[in-house]
Image (tube, rainbow over all chains, first blue to last red; front, side, top):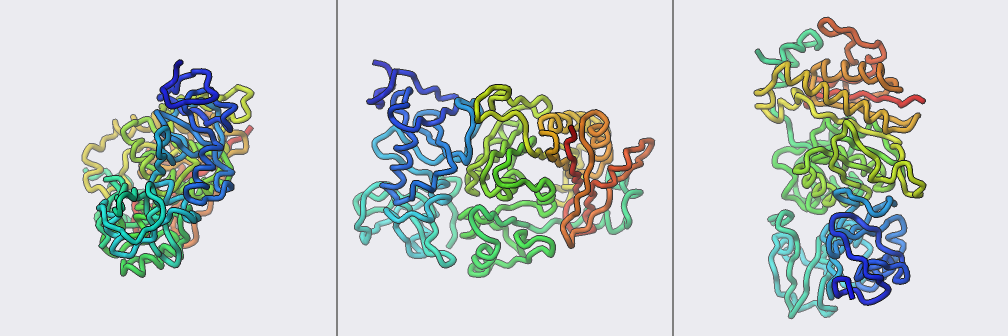
Length: 181
Length: 312
């Protein structure tokens, strides 16, 4: 058996080449690289986890570079492509719990209907500072949540929170953390 | 000698020109309409008590009263991007449509690139290239923060840019053989940025001007070659030197299939025409259609911007 051990189905043993962007296969039947997520799985994941309509991604293609870094690009390109970046990093996959990126959540999760935790102003400020906080009122799932706040008349996504054991951990990247208080 | 004095014969009011070059620039932001409307962004700033003034030529370009925009909620949400006021011109001149294939030849750190993505409504294909790998991380960071998802980033020398990574010449339906539009915001001697970087002219020399002019000609020629007939190329710099501006355009229209076209600067934004004579040189009369921006006209940095159409 070849592959990286995480691929279970449909793979003919081709390895993931971390140096280039490969378009995700549409479905498992088309998968040739072991463990590579499919477009169908990615679109389904956003819908199941965050309630994003599949049409959200109608104009986008999905790409993998490196191990499990999934990018969304608002068009199509030849595949593979040896460029530096293709669209936006949206998910870290190839692990038990996929993690969305801060930028993807800000860009696409205004329409999210599930696993969105709406923070009070002081909580939102703590979150952006990168601080973890107790949040006992959340009664939904554990795992990666969309952290959001009421802003300019809407629920606006801020970033990705990891909710475990009554605590909301901020995953705002260090370079994006700010003191907005 | 202050190199800016070289340009006294070109300006209408030498004293006002030199005085403006001595004043610092205000902090300016552009509203990113991929994520918010200008109205929402302004309302968010109002709610935080952050003072600003809307420029009188663009509703989405705001001059901040004091502090930079970095520590505000609308900035954190990617609704705002710090960008020098005058540098918003070339993307407006290029005027890309949603769905087009656009090349930004010298893209990092990405203010103009992300503005192009905004004008394209984050659709189509925007290829942002820079020869400096280190600066590409800033381009990527800015693009992702602003929610841009139609950008492909490449790291090539723009003078001999290859479309091979995009499948040029193959029958792949996704292959790109030519761009619809290209922006050449060329590396230059940066005289126009003196208000932002007071030491911008410390290393200025005529040798440097001539050396960057050679690079500028190479990039502009490649941009014309890589753009389809009927397509548009915009050439811009932040310098006053005719050697880097009009002379580069003159060379391009002489050597490649392209011509200067009229472009009206935005209403309430004053520009001067391109010059057709400089020292011992004479340039094609169509180069008057280019725009020179002097700091004392709109209280901005200095700039140069011209629009070309690729002919068959």
